[in-house]
Image (tube, rainbow, N blue to C red; front, side, top):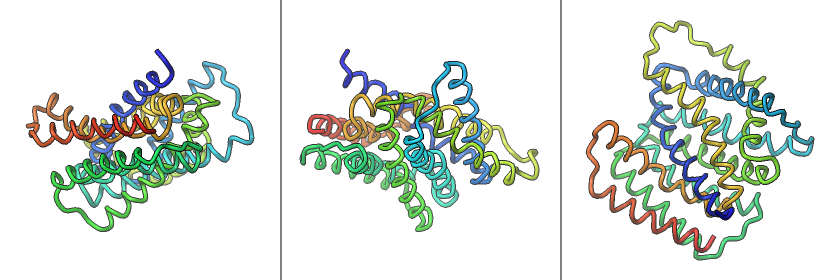
Length: 286
């Protein structure tokens, strides 16, 4: 199996893991304050990352890598989790999928700026069509949102795209799980302080769904998913593999149908088929 195929397989697994992030955040933010949720998930993931680094005896990153790790921490450890948690107090997780459709395009743009990739003009056509299809489908399904929630989600998407591209570039030298682990460790002092300051006054009113949501975003969204995602971007290319994010909303809906027995409309199947074609086209010209 060549590097590109490995990259797409690893990236696809990362997308499947990320597909549960927004619903889990929505469940957690119902009982946890957004600042505590953001900091707590980072602290839990950082402690797990520290254990990996220690057990596998990884060398510290070079001083020149600290700036890139800071950008990654700003984008995916602090920025995206906090802004989406704040946004999901105003909008539903279904409505937030409108903006997830723009994430592959943001990742591709930062892949050009930070990763030095140069996709062909046709790539942007397929990427734009795929993003428009996801955003349009999600908008029809989710109904109206709010201006505050929409602006927060747009800012989250920009920071996340930057964090993805920066992390993928650094992963080419350090490895995917090493990059996210070191970024988490870099942010640990700040996140631990914020977690202590924003501790809930009482734990009695926090439901089981919120605890499960916190556990999912801490272990899978904040660490495990990035291990596969950064590896996929590094091996398969930021602009190409990044288009797999277009499938993320549909994975979430498919899981809801399979596990929760929710109805799956024919429009979802049609939209998924169109998006798959767009992903294939983007890959062809990445």
